[in-house]
Amino acid sequence: MNRILAVHGSPRGERSHSRRLTERFLQAWLEAHPQGELTRREVGRASLPHVSEAFVAAAFYPEPQARPLSMQADLALSDELVTELLEHELLVISAPMYNFSVPSGLKAWVDQIVRLGLTFNTVQDNGIAQYEPLVRGKKALIVTSRGGFGFGPGGELEAMNHADPWLRTALGFIGIEDVTVVAAEGEESAERTFQVSCAEAEQRLLALARTF
Ligand SMILES: Cc1cc2nc3c(=O)[nH]c(=O)nc-3n(C[C@H](O)[C@H](O)[C@H](O)COP(=O)(O)O)c2cc1C
Image 1 (cartoon, rainbow, N blue to C red):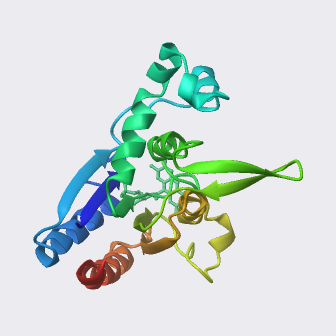
Image 2: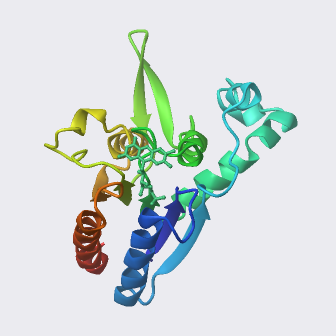
């Protein structure tokens, strides 16, 4: 079964380039995989809660099987988002660069799906916590759009990019290590410059849609 989960991280709708490129990819992916199933999860234009004290207490409760009902309620959305993630083999995330990182809605989604006992575990090794990923057999695509230029590998601003590299780290932490990044850069540059970058990103996405 080919199931793809599309997580949209931009607060913008039709004006969002990462969303538009992702939707273009999804359209091509569905054409190449007629039996494929697509689920969209909106996190850029939705109000996902920040991590709260109640969430931390519930998520890290020492006996998860005996978690009080009130704590289970504090984890209801997180449980739903984790289940949704686990039910899909493929993940595509539209992730704009905001202040060198990602929009807060996307960060909030990651905070909900990185869950002790569900997507990662801790194991003590001589008193030092070691982490064990629990998610298996998935691959991810990150489609990002940036105002500036040179944030990619080898670029002048690479060290300032805490958007897709951070997402890659967080996904790898839970076990999603097969991650591809496609970027459009220069939204704040001359229109022509950005158009070229978007066209290149689109070509990469259309090629990827056949094999993803
Ligand atoms: C609040 C905000 C912060 C931004 N921060 C950055 C940044 O740190 N670096 C950058 O290159 N572009 C930055 N941009 C530009 C966006 O990355 C660019 O507009 C991108 O296309 C947004 O994604 P979207 O089109 O999918 O909404 C920022 C834009 C906004 C609105």
